[in-house]
Image 1 (cartoon, rainbow, N blue to C red):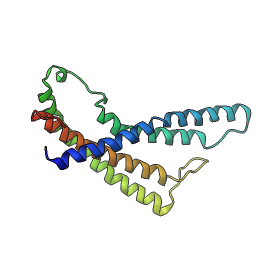
Image 2: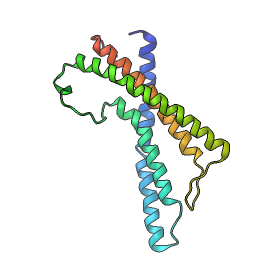
Image 3: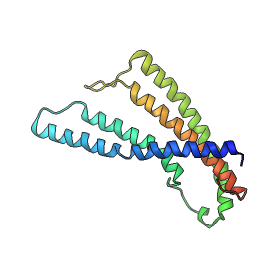
Image 4: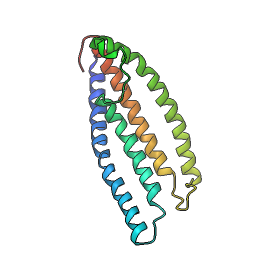
Length: 168
């Protein structure tokens, strides 16, 4: 594989490793928010923001952890025949099927960018009593989808190299 592709794969995987490992800590933040929610409902005036904030933190955890999960090849896969195939056959099949994932992510990013632009431009707020601004979570979703798209291309390059009998 060309040096530029190897550099791209190393760079994307380093970024996604750091982001993914940082995103793991969002579970602690979510537990803290839910603990505060429970305590405030029991001992104080219930907080309006806790449920939605926990949902936002969970969305960030899920979306920012996705590229790292793809990098580790730990996504769920239905294995009817896949496990019996040789590593090179798996790589060829993976390099074919990931094209559909990349197309889906590109469309998702396109829609996400329009949605984030709308949220920023018009100050979109949630429909709950708390009424949080939606722009931060929509921008974060676009960033996470972009990282997933970059990781998808890195995975494609690694699969093509593996199918050709090389390693990246």
